[in-house]
Image (cartoon, rainbow, N blue to C red; front, side, top):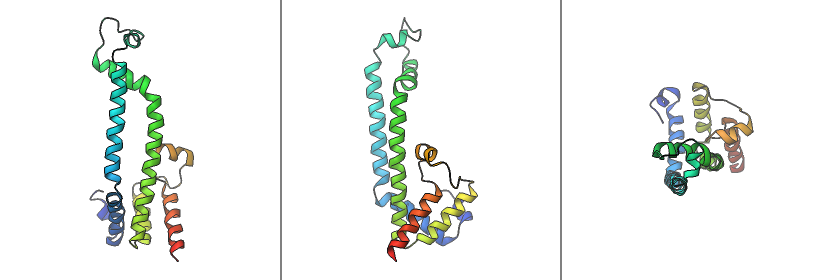
Length: 162
């Protein structure tokens, strides 16, 4: 959230967006993201420690006399960890998108569905966000679901409540 939000949307829409953000806190998304990040980096550096002594790996890149730590780190993350990172990044993106829908649901449960939908539309227009990106591309690259998917989910929740 930035101060520009206050100039982009009405007061009720700000409250709905804050309801969404409070949903992240109430549902434990902040803490779970913290722990997921800690585990991710812990695993990365653990596997780096396993490969740090592999002189054959560094010799393949021309380092035969000694292994500079920074070079070792770069080689690890650019070669060995990269495929693992692609898979983990995809899983983390799915987790993030699930959390976004859950936070939207929290705001809807507070009775702010219409204001959240309106506020999200205004923010998206102001920030020139893609309204309906390719579903496969957005599934891999976007940490937040596209606006159209979020609006459809909120409208479906509204229909269930009627």
